[in-house]
Image (tube, rainbow, N blue to C red; front, top):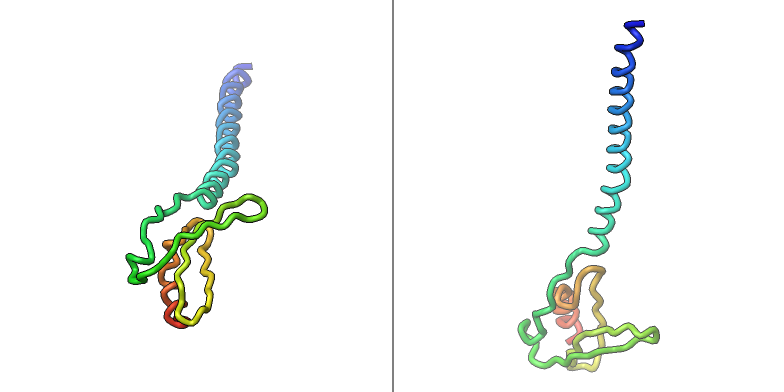
Length: 111
């Protein structure tokens, strides 16, 4: 009888420890991926502050296009010498200032 009484607190403690560990593992498996995916999708975008004029292109014009579903797209129009047109698009999480190198390369080929 005495052995049974001393085993009950040990079993209860073991059950509590295993439940706590299982809860922590489950929380880790659910919460950490959710936080990582949120950070990958909603990371902070750089502020748009560098214009083509600051990159050596004398003339440019701010342009805003509205799509059929109401989305506003903002960009710059830089006229070329031979009337060619190039549309340079940035990737997810960036803005038009992040494609400066690609834009300058494209303009050096066409301009």
